Structures are given as C-alpha cells and as structure tokens.
Amino acid sequence: MSRRSSALWASAVLLAVLPSVLFQIDALLSEPEDATGLYGFVTAYACRVDLYVRFWDSALRGLPPFWYGGAPMIVLAFAGWYASLRKGRDRLGRIVARSAATALLLPSLVQLLAYALDPRCVDPWSSAGFMDLYVLAPPILVLLAVRPHRRASVRRGRLVRTAAVVLTVTATLLVAVGSVPPGKVSADSELDCAGFGGGTVEGLRKEEKDFLCRVRGYGFFPGEGIEEWNETSDRIVLAQGHHLCGLADRHGGDIGAPAVRDAPHASLRRALASLCPSVASRQAAEEKRRQGEGAAYVAGKERACARHRTHRPGIKPVRQRRATMFTEFWTIAGWEDGYEGRAPDLVEDLVGSEPGALAIWAADEIGHACVTVESYTRRPPLETRGWTEVVEVGYESPKGSLTLSDGDGRRIRGLTAAGPGHYRVRVHLRGREQVSQVLDPPDGAVELLIMVFPGERKEPVVHRRPRPPRPTG
Image: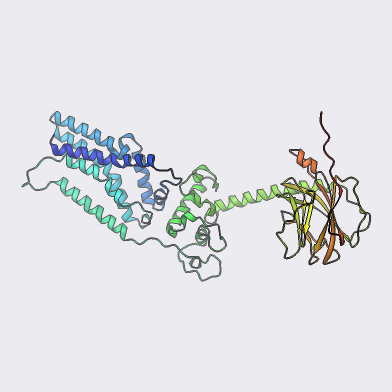
C-alpha cells in the first residue's frame, strides 16, 4: 500500500467524522436551544421528491455503518480492500471499496438532483450548500485511494473522468439552486384577508388564502399570527399546512394526535382549521359539545337558584329581578355608561361603590350566586332575619343607568329607578361560609338580595356581621 493511498484513506475517515466531533464539542460548550434543527427538517416537507430522498437517507444513516458521516463504512471498506491486497486480489479490493463509496455517494447526489428538478425544494431555508458538497468528499477520497497507480504519460482513467463529471454536475446544480429567487410572502391586501375585495394573489383557493391570513395574523386574525413563519414564503407555508392536514386527516382531524402534535411544523395547528375540512369539522363538533356541557352546567345552577323562595319585600319595589350570576374574580360588577372597568374597594368584603361603579362579592374566586335585585323610589324597611351579613353603602349615579353584569355577560338593568342622583345600596348575603369552608359546595349555596333606593347618606353602615366560628374542643 502506497503512502498516497494511506493518506487518502486517513483523510477520508477524518473528514467523515469531523462534523460529528465538532457538533459534540459545540453541544458541550453551548447552551441547549429549544428549536434545534427545526428549519432544515421542516423545509424537507415542501418538496415531495426531497421528502422521499431524505426518508431513505435517514433510514440508511440510522444503520451503524453510516454513523459518524459513514466513517465505519469507510473503515470496513479499507479492511476489505487491504485484506484483498494482501491475498493478491487487487480487483476484488477495488470492488469492495468502490461499492462502499457508491453507497455513501448515491443519497447525496440524488438529493442534489432533487433540488434542481423540483422548484418546491428551493427556498431560503433549503439546506443545499456547503455541507451537500462536503459529504461527497470522503467517498471521493476512497475512490481516489483505490485508483490503480498509472504513469503520468498514461491517459486519465475512467475514475478521474467520472469524478470530474460528478463535481461539475454538482457545482452546476448548486448554482441553479442559488439562482432561484426566494418565495413570496404576500401582504394583507394582496390576500384580501379583510374581505373587501381587490386581492391580487391568484391560483390559490379561498381556504388556502384564509390559512395564510391566519398564519400571518392578517385581517380578522390580529394577534393570532404564528411569528416563526413570518418570513417563510407562501409556497412553503402552504406545503407545510397541506402536509400537516394530511397527518390530521389520518387521525380524524384531531390536531392533538401525537403524529400531528409532535411534527416539526406543529405550530401551524392553530391555523389548520382554515385549510383542513376534517379539522374544521372536528373542532366544530368539539365546540358544540363544549357549548352543550356549558349550557347543562348553567342550567343546573339556575335550577338550584330557582328552588329558593322568592323574596317578599316589606314595601312594593318599582321592579324586582332574579338571576343566576357567575364570576371568576370573586365579585359581580355594576357600571354606568362611560364608567366601565372601575373596581371599588369592598366594605366588610361584601359591597363597595364609587361614582358610576359598584362591586359585590359573589363567590370564593370562581362560582355563582343566586341574585335578587329590587329597585325602590323610597327607603324599604330593614331586613336582617335569615341573613348572615347585611351591609349598606352610598352610591352616586351620574347617569341613572346602573347595570349589574356578571362574567358571562348576563345583565340586570334599571337599578336606579329615580334617575341620576344619590342612592343607598343595601346588600344581604347568606351562604359565604359554605363556599369558603367546603371543597365542593352545593349549587345555589350563595344568595344575594340587593336593594337600591334613593338616599343622601354616604357613609357605609354594617347592619349585620357574620358570627365568629365557634371554638372547637
């Protein structure tokens, strides 16, 4: 074995393992990142040919001889070639080495050819570049290492001519790839996301335009865009979306299926209903089911509240309203037009007011209350019997339009029967101890009676406080 062959074999092994070694060193010295390798892998799905090539290439490189850039394959080829030389069977050794080199060369050459033949394979994210040439170097060095020695005057053999053709074709393909302009990212007006007409994008179906609008956060989807796809061309986004749609179709439109959820382009799931009918149908069915469950939940609470006896006031109110009201933040609110959003401090943790705004405790953070509201034009008699807490506060009505609202949009209007002016708001409560001390309190446990009547006094009055809990033991 000549020094030239030894040097070429050693160089082939070193070049094969070098990227893996550098990667391991970089992994040890760098902080881990969440999205490692996402872009290059995602781009593969935009190109059908490249997808198949990469699939088989990944399958091959998962075999031990193809690990570390094919270094084990090269070592095995060297062993076979060297053993053949020792036994005087040079031709067999060259066949073994060239077969190994071909196995390493073929997937990379086919992939490069796919980049040139299928325009969908070309994108700013495309991985065609230096590494596609680099992986060709080790097998080419193997071919050169087993090339029979010839005198300088002898005409170059088939191997040299083949290597020259391969390098020329590869360079031509990469130039072709680099000369293709990047894909277009359409603007809001071009896709007509707002539906005003005048869109200029052609060749796309409505659902494809809607999908792009949703991914970009255009039109009716402000704030819903998927930021990591902002600079990706329409062509690639649609290709990724169609591929993800195919995965979802195979699972009944379920975007939570592992095959869809764990896909490298799974972030597009949020917009997939615009593109994929099976996803849209499944989500519509899920929404209908949730609405049914929500309606059943509310109906159960309303039935519990309806079982309470209707309050019989001492004097006749202008109006009396009953409602089951829900909250996720302890209180239900009362506001007048232009005063929405204010949150008064509570007196005795029950009721608070400021001009144009009212707040009343209704639940232990999340829950519901059975509410009765009575509006008067004069002061009603005081009632404390049967109630654990009764607190009265002053309220200034700027517009005479106080409306009580809960977290689900239910409203009780007409609380200020005498129009703008000064009022008193008397709130009666029972059931607080049940929701604060019991993990799963019964429906309808909290009852509120709210009386609103004219009055000039501003200071709060506590008519009844809750009794302190009895000592145990």
